[in-house]
Image (cartoon, rainbow, N blue to C red; front, side, top):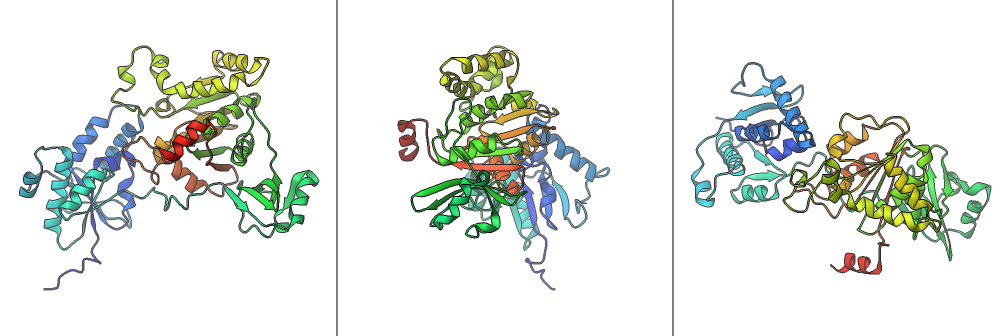
Length: 446
């Protein structure tokens, strides 16, 4: 009797609940391989059906998907996921294996999922069985039992080191290369600067020739480099080249989507707010939002008061940045303008949970702490943009509070990786902290 070659037989992927809550369409991303859903996963999804958060949407979308794939009942061999794809199987529970009982004291959903995967590994041998979970601890447990376990990486960026930074340093240029930037309005055709290879739309450059330097950006539509001047916004002046790059993108109406990444104190949120107030006449409203990711076990429901009172602790960093902008004008007009805009609802601070379903027209929309958003949440926000709307995401990719996201799988990294080269997109990575000497020292040493 011939034994099947494991390399030619489709793999069987066992899916954890957190993968489905991350991406409801995950079962379509395993090519010709088969997918198994432990029954305990459906039990966990049942707890997420109600609500307005993204995980609730993902749970409902997935349950509707598998209901549409099946007829009256699941076939024993599984049901086809689609053309060119494998089958979907629902695996009922069974008695815990002896090795699990010996290793763990508690019975929980994770251990039941692990038990299902181990049982399938025995039944399907020599076929490869892989547990897919975003829970690092469960992956380690699975590997301890000799079971292959992997993260869900479909929407992960390939490498943090290769992530687009939005800027490039070009040294040792001929002195004559910089002279045209001070003539003809500061424009230079791309073919006249052959030292720069494969320029990217809205990419920023620090061009140096000896002791002279020029800040420039590339306009892909006109195929030319444009000089960037150090221009302030709402009294806020850029303190380094990266902040000049950021303000240029923030105040350019042709750039509809801007992402700013960088460490704490690099000025991401402050620059975005300053640009929004400077451009207030061109937009109907400035909308500010940030993910509600508490650092303790308290959530919105535990805080007293109405929605504004509940949101206030989470939105305080945005108010802090507004307070920095307000005193910059010596006559006090900036302070008055910010307060009047808040009272007239020209500046609105809202939770992201209520963005779904809205259509935002002529809005300057700033989303702070975007590294705590999933790729699907990022997509949901961007697709809310109507005519004349500008969306800005700010965040620190190295400071993630979400339990199932990392520097490669978070929504901010995802949108940076996918949007590179688009003419209406701009990105800048801010590396130098400007909050204070103490803040900069803490970022480096602690």
